Image (cartoon, rainbow, N blue to C red):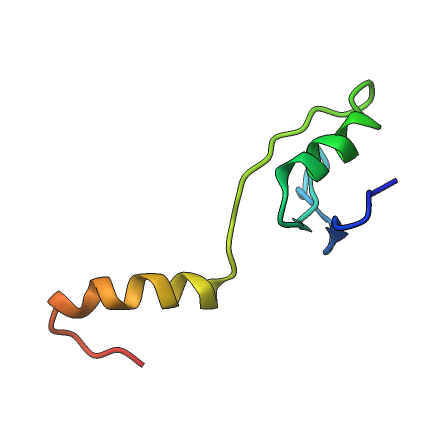
Length: 72
């Protein structure tokens, strides 16, 4: 039921099975909202924007230049 432009990545469940996490990829939050709208009566959603570690490293590395410690 995902609209075009919204990609399902994977699904993880807590060990107690109380919550499920489904990383999705898209460039427009409205696609997530449209997808969630199909399930609103069964599931509560929380959207948390994240980025891959590589992308985070590219952003933070220049900021770390003021510190004198080894980096890989």
